[in-house]
Amino acid sequence: MILIGAVWLFTRPWTQNFAVSLEDAGMFSTTAYKSNQGHRVRRGTIFGILLLVGAGVYTLISHGSLARGNPDWAIDIPFTGTEKVDSLGDTLGFFADVPADSKNQLEVRYGGSSTSGLRPGQSVTYDRYVAAVEAVVKNSEHLQEVYRKAIPDATKLDAPHYIDTLDRQVIWPRVRKLLAGTEATKSFRSRAGDPAIRRLQTLYNATSDDDPSEVLEAFKREVKLLSGPDSEKPLLGEEFDLPTAVLVLDRYVLRDVNDRAADHVKVTLEGGGLKYGAIVSKTDFDAAVKKAEEEKELPPKSRPLEKASGTTAFASIPVLPAVQFTVPLLLLVGSIWLAWRLVNLPAFADFLIATEAELNKVSWTTQKRLIQDTVVVLVTVVLMSVFLFGMDQTWRFVLSWDQIGVLHIPKDDSNKTKTVADRPW
Image 1: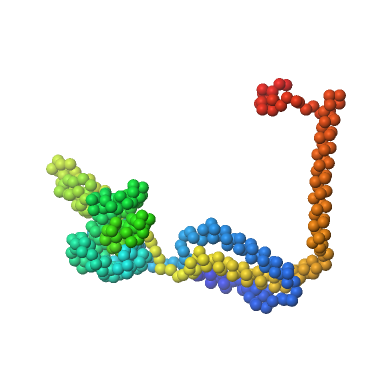
Image 2: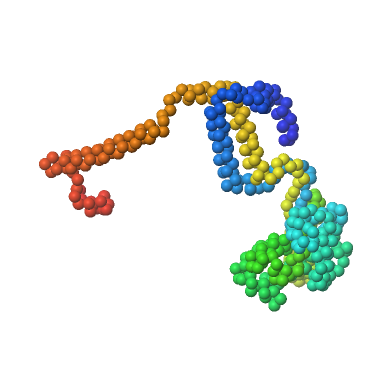
């Protein structure tokens, strides 16, 4: 729609006439108009325009107006939406039916150690991510033991199950030990202190188990504040060297997964042969309820499955990168060009030249005479102020005499602090 609107606008006759008028006025020309006349007034006009634009640019930067939102301006391409799955909810088992090539793309959230070779925000394939994780595991006997116990064979897992198993069975247990204060993590708690532990505990409680990256970064920040980066591994553990990632899916693939999950429920109370936490179809659950009622047992209870969710992202065409820096730069460059062209427009340039000619006819006073005149004005003002003050006090004194009685000035000031109701009439 934007492209169609731009084409329609560009083909309108009045758009062409406007462009021709700008060209005739010399807005796209580098030729100056009467360049040997009106230099001082033209320079002053350019300086004034640049001062106004500079004040606006300073306000944008100081208020951080351009730092909010996306760092780049881009146009999203329709039908290219992908979903960065921040939470799998209860749908993990439904990804088995998704083709392997549709769940092969990941986005790194936490880079881990330099051994992984990954950085936050990087897009990688599932095989590349597994290779990076195992490169970190290979350098630690402790990680090899924990990793092989949780994931004996990575080739038997698809991307969603691998990410979920790595997070829940390898990384999160270490985080919980640090927060719980076991014997192995006593040194971390003693060094971090109660305020830091409370901050980390609050963040942990508010974070989904599907993505531990924010919690891991918070732990590393707290440790750096304590002793610097060299103490990270001894205090936190080698699990913090492992990278984390989230699944990137086509949004329609994610929609299909959630649609399949909508026909199932999660058991919250055992009964009718169903175990607590089991995910079953609504048909099987209704059959279990009927069976429990026939056998006069307590029927099971359930809740709807939590759907997978994430952040939608589109492929985009960059329009303006690094908005925080390029917009002020473009404003300054554009204002310089506009100011220079403005003072070279024939009509406005002739006005500025005539203005400077009139200013040249003015007889400007010398510095010595200016000082003398300023002193005379200031002395006159002071003398007039003293004279008027003296006359005011003299007449106040004369007209307040009891014999004259024109002004009545009470001598008792105690009534000034009283309310109107308390004052004597």
